Length: 194
Image (cartoon, rainbow, N blue to C red):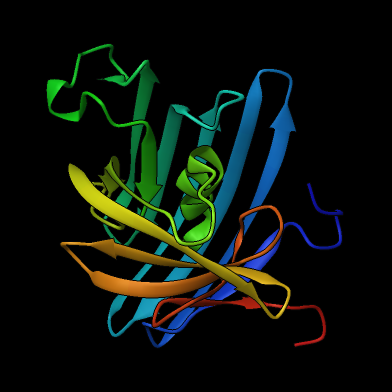
């Protein structure tokens, strides 16, 4: 894990007129916790998202809670997972999500760390996975197929290509913790002094 001076990480969104995200990755005795928030202003739309993701020691998602504050009020969603079987906050099973080991909250690039760390790809390797996609700001949940391809390191960073059928293909660089530095056409890490 990096030093506290590198995390929490802050990103500026480059796909919307105004967007700023902040997130951190924290070790816990039985796994890891991701905490993040993001504020976006786009035209008349504006919202704040906050989410927490918990994983086991193998980086498999065990719980996610996402909350959105917008002009419509506050909405939230909670999901729990065990062995690729998902349920909502009320304990209702979600069979359409069976087999998903990762969650992708569409706010800040922090949740890309989950498959990057879990898969442990070597340069030249790729893997197709299915994830629980939580759309922001709607909090709609769906199953999405994604591909991660790892490239050789360059400029002191690790490089990946990410692809999904909803949004297309993006290149991203990550630091030694697997936390995104630059996410093509989506977000760029802010460094102290910028």
